[in-house]
Image (cartoon, rainbow, N blue to C red; front, side, top):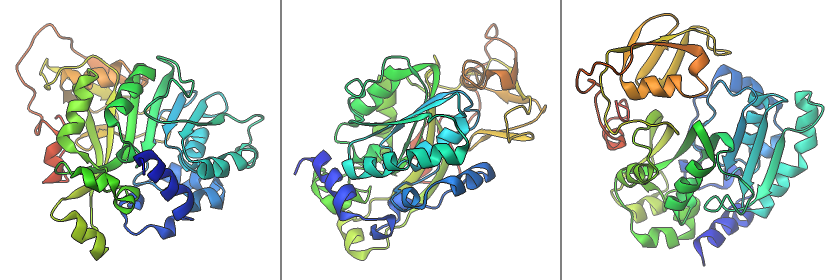
Length: 347
């Protein structure tokens, strides 16, 4: 059976709710903000019940943004994003599974009324995340792309990332949660419907992921959250052998950055103006900004803060006129996360 067809079968017919999953890979514990915990109470129970995800890939400061959810399933994250972008924003969900799309679309009016909107700001389209052009997503049209434990299911991950950067606006962001592995897995794992459907058989090898981003001129990305995945199902664990799996939340921006963190003596100040975050803003798992407290940053971090939607919320002092060598940031790749879950990606 073709891989995409196998995934459609698993999520459309084999699983009736997230209680049917045989591992926790697709439903790892989430560290949701208080704001999201409140918003999720507004979402229809059936949408929650048929949700399969491994994180909470919804960053702040989304008012009036256009958001694209890849593999939107029953629509949980679309309806969360709907509340975050507000009535003037827009959220598009792309999914290939008819049964999931039917659930998401059926509850569209319920959520419009629940959120107090005069018209719906969400749209669900059937399509493949490897070919967003066929789904009508234009070049440079999206502020934020989210995805929740879906990219691992794709048979052509390089095409997925290429499409992401095509449709993303300059300064736009990719923010996604998915399952990663510390090694390349045998091709046969992707032919096993259970291993694939449980989000393990197609898990991204961390270094291959880095190389895919580099091909799209994305030379720096950040780990925002990480946690190991324990496979407690003995039959599945025996198939997987010694491979280690991790649920990671990643962010990357469509900005011109370098492949190493460079020191130009720049300092960043968070103004405390992002709604719901008056005191602290976390860019990633190792950059915590306290309001009005100066923090030395590399040039890549400075660009992530000054050339994106976060620009109004930060003051950057210094320029690129004087270079002081490499910025003392730490590990250079996501691979380090597979041995120490407390460290980050580039710096």
